[in-house]
Amino acid sequence: MDILLDFLKTGAFANMSWGNLSMLVVGCVFIYLGVAKDYEPLLLVPIGFGILVGNIPFQPGMRIGIYEPGSVLSILYTGVTQGWYPSLIFLGIGAMTDFSCMLANPRLILLGAAAQTGIFLTFLGAVFLGFAYKDAAAIGIIGGADGPTAIFLSSKLAPHLLGAIAVSAYSYMALVPVIQPPIIKLLTTKKERLIKMKPSKPVSKRLRILFPIIAFLITAFIAPGSLNLLGFLFFGNLLKESMVTERLASTARTAFIDIVTILLGLTVGASTDASRFLTPASIKIFILGAGSFAVATAAGVIFAKIMNLFMSKKINPIIGAAGVSAVPDSARVCQMMGAKEDPNNFLIMHAMAPNVAGVIGSAIGAGVLLATFG
Image (cartoon, rainbow, N blue to C red):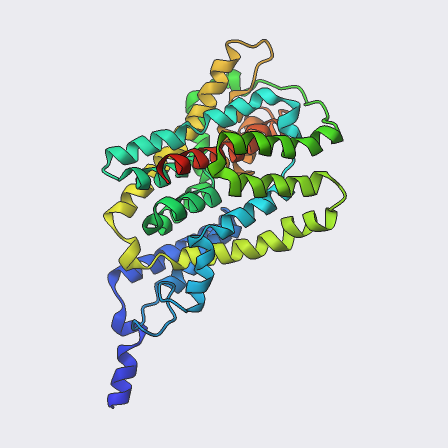
């Protein structure tokens, strides 16, 4: 009986708390949204299941938890806490990304830059709510709508908030199709949403090859703190565009990025142990995250409207919302909104320009914050 009682004391039922039960429900909701609603399933399904893994209680000292040194989860989680996974994911993103849409219409880069307003306004909001500068900087990057960048910066500046920041960033990325449409409709008129843009001109192979090299050198000198992220991003893109390393590019954008995404999603989810995750700070971070996505979307749309005041060739302001770097979901939302007004209005390629510019912009923003507060 003593052995049986000791066994029960180490089990999940004896150590279960209401916080653990709440997080188990959250994990199931994430999986439901990924499977049933198709909201970023490649992210929400691993994170959701990771939340289940991280909230099964056990007796401390068994070396199985993500915060117990030497456990399998702890070893895998090192890729998050040390910032390895985000850089490796950027390698795969670079190998998948076609920057020609941005190079064909460089003015649209400004929309990607404008959307980064969300980063710095969220930083100010976090400071106002009482967070320390380093913590506020890590929270602010949620406004860039880029999960890997948020993880990278929070691992450097606020590792104690990493779980809340990562889950917040990925949650709102998955909800882009829900968050952005009402903001776009509120800030634009029907006439503006009907604006048609001419197809972009083709970009030469030479320019596509030179771009990742030149862009890396420029951004690295501007924001050396973004070296890891942008270095891997542009290296992956060079593998793709050079056409002589197709095997490497193919690996980077398929099996390689899939493996890293699985490990990152599962371990980020497992890091949300209720005793560490359900805190007043986490609630504030989720509120700030929602506001940052709304601000970033609004800033891109409003800046597109301002640009139209000075240009003869008008921009459909819908694509300003794609300045947030949730690739390619925000660009798809723009296409959906344009097609809803006019089924013959194809905005997807135009929207991809500020979308990929936003990826670069959020990484530069992270580099600036790291250099300032690191």
